[in-house]
Image (tube, rainbow over all chains, first blue to last red; front, side, top):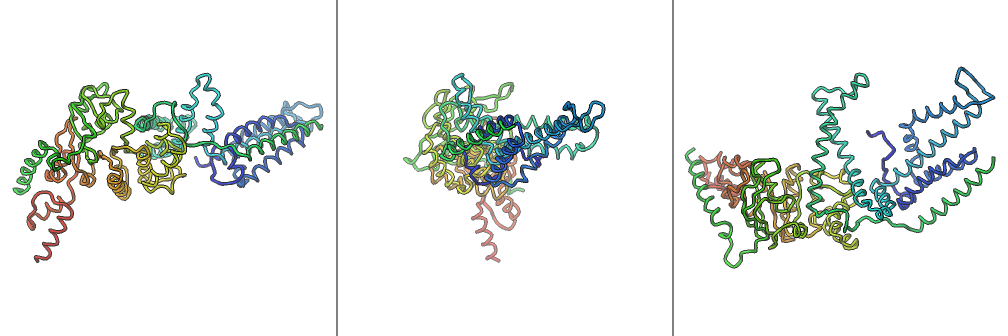
Length: 266
Length: 308
């Protein structure tokens, strides 16, 4: 469970860490959008330079990002192979039955690979430099307009932050239950797929039971501390929009402009 | 054997005496404090259960008193505190907190006067960081942010956890987590603090710090402490011990009188105090007259040594 880099926060301090989480959150999604605008070597190269620059500014070791690619490895390989071998072409380099390898196909495969790398790097950058609670605060702030249509934004945000807060506790609980079941002779590592899946049933049921009892305890504790519903509450954590956030927006506008420019060169 | 049974019967007589005279007996006239909690004929049973979890309890608790509630599991200790905080609604009877009878309208004000520290430190942490958690109760009251910042700092300072402000709860020890929970309770400036077996999941060191902290805060903040516990040492700090059994108060007495019950304590979910065990072992050598405090025991032992 420790291997997963995606969704993990890495304590640190740099310009990227200090940016308003709402801005980081929105920029990440914006960037994922503009990745699809890139259409030639120059534009992809430019986006890669942008991402590497962001990584450099964040002062996070590049190795973390490469590790972040690992869980996606098979998906990337599969998609890239699909593009490389199934792109129809009149001028194939190599041809066998329904598989065609061509220059066009390879280029498209390379682009797809770049898209994966760019999107995974930028989203890893978001989660490595932003605490889960900052992300949940950002979501609350971004969803605020939905209050007009009676969407319970504050409650959903509290739910989200409590859920995040209890993830490590539930991981502990899972480890404990797994150890207890192992002590009773359950083997999680062996047998076929079906057998392994079945072995997880004796983990899931106690885990559900203990989650419910934790939820009950927490609800009692929250009520005793005066939690009624989302309304009438003040907020201790606030997000501060500062000048550097404005500059980041200007910078992003420039990035977009350059991207559009590069895109038009064919 | 003769001696033990004799002490037992003496203690039973003295125990009963205290039940009748209650604690007014120990306070000089004119200094009797106001009741901060007044419970009258309260009955409660859990939905789907046939037995009353709280079976006609009447109890007055004075301001600044330290009360221990003891009893076996399922004797109704936790249920009683939940009724006090309005987390469960009693079937009949009334509960008065600081002179106000609690009902649906007044309970939210009553809760501001009561803070509960629960048993499992992990199951009461709402915030993602220490400071967030301490602020939770204040956020619920809608306190403006700048006031909250000072209140959170003040509360963390009281429990000596100010250096851990930004920490993630997962990185704290059990004792530290309970101190944060106490800070969260203190932030709302309660008059009553209920410890619902708050030290039972801690190691001896964590337990000691938490108990000492409560002891110190009680004097500083003029708190009324209600402590549910199985720990005999914790009960020694209290002014009064209430023993519950099947939802009823079976004893309401001062610690020394309860400890005189000797091995009978086990029936109430308590162990015998260490001094009792020593005294029982030495009864042929030294003449003990009922329960003896640790200081008293040391004095007797020193005496014994000098006689030789």
